[in-house]
Length: 119
Length: 201
Image (tube, rainbow over all chains, first blue to last red; front, side, top):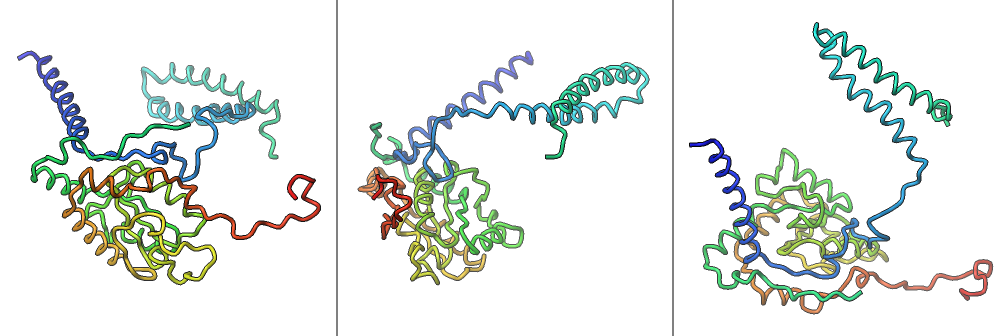
């Protein structure tokens, strides 16, 4: 038997299960829509405004610093596990140097704009 | 904006479904009660204790991880309901899907409890939403909640959902909004001369 036949069978069984569950729900489940039920869930109070909201543009600086520090750490930890290996070590050291240098430019920019001062 | 809503009903096959199917449905509803904890006061601590390892109501099929009212089957109102909180309770109950059940947990939620003569405490959550099981106590022990849950499960096991019963439940209150359970001001706030500015007086 072709392995694709098995995959096809699994996909078919999954689709059938989904259709069966939805059909049973359609013919058996109770339904009682009200205006309050259909309104947006806002922890029990009336929704205000629309789904789209504006964020003040000056918060981009926090996103900026987040990228500098958090994304930095995300890439540094996996790098630490391969730095000793013979085939990746030197190349990854150079690559991470470039990566961190780019981030340092961002950090220097943030410092120049006065973002790192306390209050 | 006016929205035309269909009348409440059960699924087209439900009323004529053979008895085993109804038994299976009730069995499923009974043992997977996703609970929505409306913790308002100290009774909520007892509710949390009932959900933890020692009392552990998950063994009864009560799952305390409903992310919101739309995923919940059971609302446990545990604590003092104030008139200010009342519209929110009503709105969240309205947003739960059918079939839905309510346990009133503790004296305050049952009747106002020790705050029966307060100016701002709702005298029982059953003034806002239909309650299935009342658990007495101030606060009740977690065992009392377990007993209440078992009582509710007995009730679910013996109930028969029908279009007629579900319409009876919604009769007269389908268009009620949360604002309708907000009490109007008893006394108009006094306006002092400085704040009037000509238009309020």
